[in-house]
Length: 351
Image 1 (tube, rainbow, N blue to C red):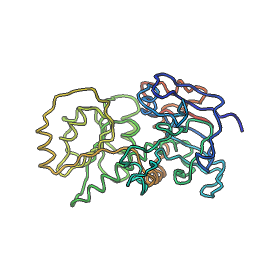
Image 2 (image 1 turned 90 degrees about the horizontal axis):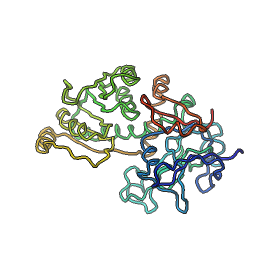
Image 3 (image 1 turned 135 degrees about the horizontal axis):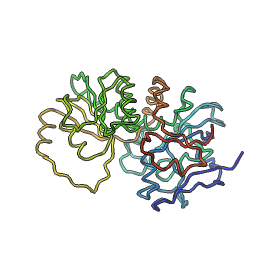
Image 4 (image 1 turned 180 degrees about the vertical axis):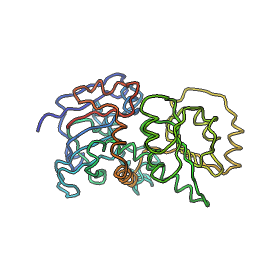
């Protein structure tokens, strides 16, 4: 085998991104399934880790291999779970060692004590390397037709979980939702809109962009694109998926939802910003209209499998259109530099 290339950072140190050309082969302890990396997707989490905002190297290591949106090809699997040549993605989060009640039943996305680990983020090496290993419970097979877009599985798993929880909450009463509002037309927002369209809802997407690929991508789903403030929308959504994390948008969509509405907060605010708002009006709206607001992050295996099915049923050309740039690993620094019209940038290890 050739040397392993790996994209790494020194956690907590800004701008320490480095491509190591002779990184060690993945240790057998990482998993029985050996995978050749095809590509990884890059997201805001990677940029925050590169900026030194967070990230944790594996025990005893100084550097962290980043990359958590994986796509690979199985090289060997002595367990027989997968076959050589199968496409696979690695589940990012692993349960804590205690484990907490949720981790004990496979709901590591709902970990209670925060001792979970995450590939490329927290205490586990990521997938931005030529080869990686994974244990069978954390290996998700992909349809061969997804060979160019399978790295979208991780962000799709996040919105698959969001929709799973929305539908569970909706069972509290007779509920016949028709209108869905998604705020933010980044990868998470567009994939949330895709899953809404697959459910047959009237889908509306709100984003600041008035040019570039976003409006066209929304229209291709049969959805309606808006670039106005939330309060100017002329409808009340039954479901809101808030994917921007912008504080003013978060507060406005809570007040905009229809009676018995459900608002899922999937975007993470940066914090450190204070804004004036009428907390009493928000309270009145939520209480008197029986509305629910909840946060959602990460996903467990069931959600990854739901996401794989959603991608399999999606238009492959539409999925490919989400990918703004494909950059070879030799140009890794360019891949981690934001472009003005980027939606999803992919770092390619093998073609």
